[in-house]
Length: 112
Image (cartoon, rainbow, N blue to C red; front, side, top):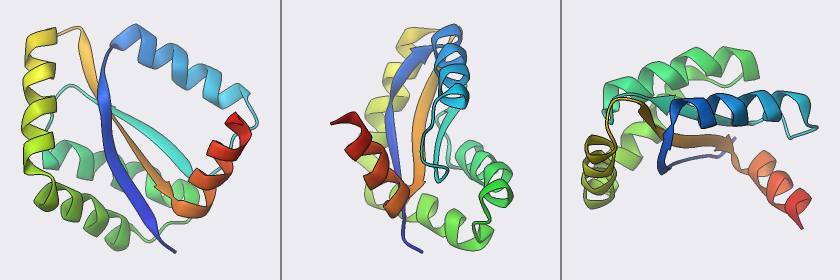
């Protein structure tokens, strides 16, 4: 199974919570997870992916490798979002999306 991981932005905690609640009520593809963290660190997102992987039947090692690969390949983007998170203050989260490509494609198709 092919996966994707990407940082999406910074948002207030309450907005992220509201989004997660709405996602749980909608008929969305099961292989897409939005992850929020108070820290823009590799360790924080690895921990998040390790937590959600068993729920989807994803191989944890493969999922972690995708996050590590993103981290090694996107240093400038990571620095940018880390700075935005620092500027936003403590009441905000950095949000990332982890998904299997098939489910992500299905989610995009639902939008149209």
